[in-house]
Amino acid sequence: MLPHAAGDSGDALLEAEGLNAWYGRAHILFDVALSVRRGEVVALMGRNGAGKSTTLKALMGLLPGSAGRRRFAGAEIAALQPYLVCQLGLGYVPEDRRIFTDLSVAENLEVGRRPPRPGLPAWTPERLFQIFPNLAEMRHRSAARMSGGEQQMLTIARTLMGNPQAILLDEPSEGLAPVIVEQMARTLKALKAEGLTILLSEQNLYFAREVSDRAYVIEKGRIRYQGAMADLAANDEVRQAYLTV
Image (cartoon, rainbow, N blue to C red):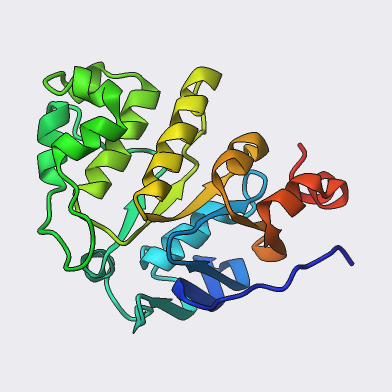
């Protein structure tokens, strides 16, 4: 039995218990439990096909075939449609980006604009351009003429225009050049410094270690390990069993 650190859901902004999910008749997630506290960056780690993206979609309410308890900001969200979960302040950044390629950077940001939330910092294009200086330089450029890394940053920025309390970030470093991965890590650190709560799915241990406070490891739809990110990075047994290819 591999080590399984005790979790602490105190002051949790996002929680899931007994989360199960199916694609048709295929059972994908098995009683997943996790929590993310306010202001934390938590990594959900695992190999391809382990259930990371499915977990984020189930948390957001994007999978009709899912069951279990989900809470966000003190509200039960298991029965809510995804747009209502979004209105509560949970943003979602999919792996496949889904930007509007026929719109400019500035126009993409306007699509995501929502009113400020009481008690939370308000995101504006000007503030986002400080966090994402590359986007500032190409604010009038068509999104179709951006690199994959630039499109990923635009997707995150557009989600932030909705003024979320927290975001679900799916595979932010996937397919990016190392120099862009470093830039993405700096960006997430800056967002954390602004008080944003982040749950990210990730395979890249180096990237996750750079930005995350805690980590969960998922394999075949089951949580196999949870603990501080530093403890996971130092645990050769867990990394060999669940993260190495």
